[in-house]
Length: 519
Image (cartoon, rainbow, N blue to C red):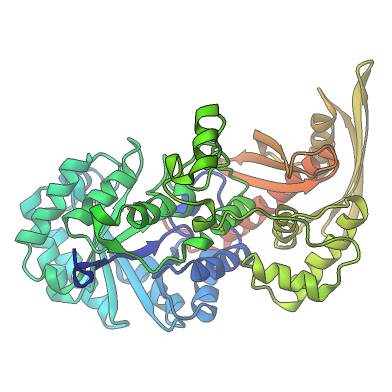
């Protein structure tokens, strides 16, 4: 197999758009910008930065990313109508490589029940909206929503029409994760063989994971001729999620003999990208998750341990270092200065401005007074906290608890600059603290998820807490870390409340349109 036959696969990352639709994964502009910086370091070809028409907050995030992130295509999603497309253009136009990504459903099911359009009406709309988008930027991606359940002949016709109208990328989504690998291989191969002009554009796929087949379907599509895959870090996304970027990239990397394909991804940044997303959203990956899970390179069975010690390749098909999972020793402490701290931030993938560095450094010095050993995971926690908007700020928490008393908590919270205090009992110290905070903020949100884990499992380690709250069908996850579990829990709850406030503010300022449809 000669090197001249090696195929280049573009990686289209939609963590900031489709990934954010995962329940509890809402991100503010600063968090999105920080993740976009890491995606650029990772080496993705396209960052789908958001859905600009959805809200003013989403528009501003896409615009900020387009203005700052260089050398990467920046895409904004738009339904196939002029208002959406112009809004997307207004956000991505600041990019060196702007992309308008417009979509419309093509299956008879969606035409009948959602769009209430005929095939001919759909065909004309798709072509006209691609032409309209083309009047603003050169790179236009067209997606046929629910393509895998669309009549093939009609889909071919639509694809040929949008290519003639100026689309430079055609995306084939398996929107509801319905396809199977062999079926999807044939589906993509037929498009390659039968659609006029397909050889002149990028053929992309976007697979969902409802049946756990998103990665398998994406890899099958590559074998069939697709040259772009749309995916997310940790596979987050709508419902069961998207194809996981790290799994696709490492499958191509490890099995070059099968796929004969390469990407631009710097694989040593994969684990850092996964960790950063986890810290921003508070959504952890399961321990046995491929590539980035805690146990992905762990060997407990004696036979496995013996084999790995003798020759790693007996039970490891890739090295932890290949995906950036080097062991991290203590390098910072209470005597470390700002310069060393800044260099550490940069080595971890954070590109922060002076104020962000200063805020994180203040928290670092406070933590180093409580904790001797500062690990990379601790730094991640500090940066995550430094990127949080604060309408509410926890100023004080104290609990009385034990096996012979009813837990009681007293808290003080700054609300828009005014210090308020209250107390409450609960089923435990954490419950009591959250109940007391609820009395102050008078929130209607309900706690629906709680997770605590140790950062570097020693008794003096920070407790890393994630709390998910729900209000009016919207799930928001807050996160914080502290050497005191109760304090960490209270701070995580307040963090979630702040994110919910930002979310609700964006909804109020948005265009109030009905944003429906997904890829």
